[in-house]
Amino acid sequence: RFEEMDRTSSWERYRFSFQTYCELSGDYRTVRGEYSRTLHVEEGTLSPLIVVSPILGGEKDSYLASRFIARECCRRGMCAFFIYQERSILSGQRDASGLEARMRQSVRDNILALNVLSALEETDPQRLGSFGVSLGAIRNLVLMAAEPRLRANVLCLGGLDLVSILQTSKEPMVLRYLSQRKSEEKLAAMDLIREFEAYFPSNPKNLVGGISPNTVLLYLAACDEVVPYAQGLALRQMLGAPEAYLMPLGHYSALIAAPWITSSALEWVSWQWSPVP
Image (cartoon, rainbow, N blue to C red; front, side, top):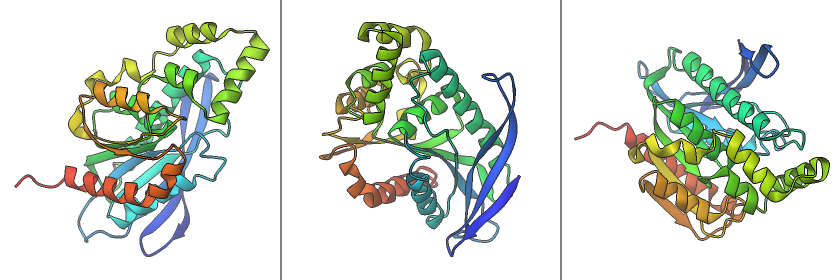
């Protein structure tokens, strides 16, 4: 189901929804998201399709980052979509098994949406990619491992090992989550580490070995304390040293570079699909 939201000279934006079975509830659930259709395309030409993954606080900021990326995709002749997420992913009531189930659900939802939207008459099923920032980059690593059709993937401010990121991150929502788990369940730090190592197999460090470095572009911030820079470097090494930009910025101060990051990233994405001379 599609419902038009608005249109500009660059895009038509729709809210979409579909039904899928949910293992968490044992019942069917509705998946909702936004699809942005580019108007910058020659007649008779199919457009690439980009999966955008929201940041951790996506719903809280009305998906501004995801909508910005989708808009820029449309300005460059690409369609894009993202799926809405719950307001509080890192709930203190959700243990490692719950986060694992949520990650798998997110991957399934994105693959189902990719199947539907890549079959539209305006999109090219041979030119599919992804764009993720922060949590979106981590989530897209898992999606990329499960979905070989994604051949141009931008990962910005991501990292390799979610367990290490949880241990060292200065992100307030992460710190709040750990504090709630420790106070409500009387868990020591090592108990949490062992829990995630045992019950979170979707940790990117377990999955990224099969991803081709030629399909990835990285943006890392040297002063990042939210997804620590060391984790970004570890990710690059595990991926086989793909092309990367290393920025002298922090996680949130990287916002000032957002226009350049998006422009250079989407130029690279376009180049990925250019005919070889």
